[in-house]
Amino acid sequence: MVANENDENLINNLLNYLIGEVDNTPKEPSYLLKLYLKLKNFKQASRIALIIANGELENSNFKSAHKFLFDTINTIESANEKVPMELSQKFALIHS
Image 1 (cartoon, helix red, strand yellow):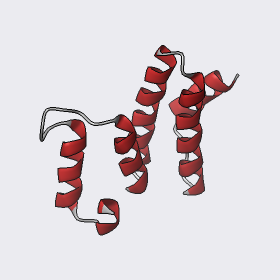
Image 2 (cartoon, rainbow, N blue to C red):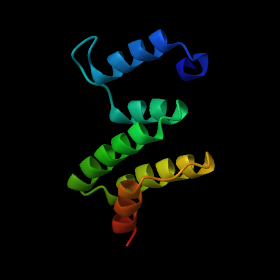
Image 3 (cartoon, helix red, strand yellow):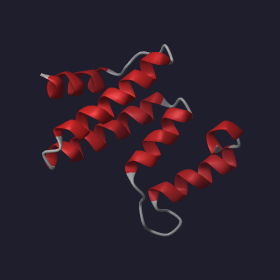
């Protein structure tokens, strides 16, 4: 809903809340990923997806890592945008 408003101040407040600037408690990174995807900020979304996937891989959650990357790639491709190489490479590595 915030992303649809295009209110820069509202978006910045939400970003500050999600990264923990408001209460010193960073929120689940998947919320940040969803926000960046909704804002069509695919560069930042890709960065967050890689962070999430790496965390999942460290915990041996390969299916979860695969899903985050797959969903992010599909969202970027459906917007007719170019998928960042790092994201594609990580997905190929997990998928193989």
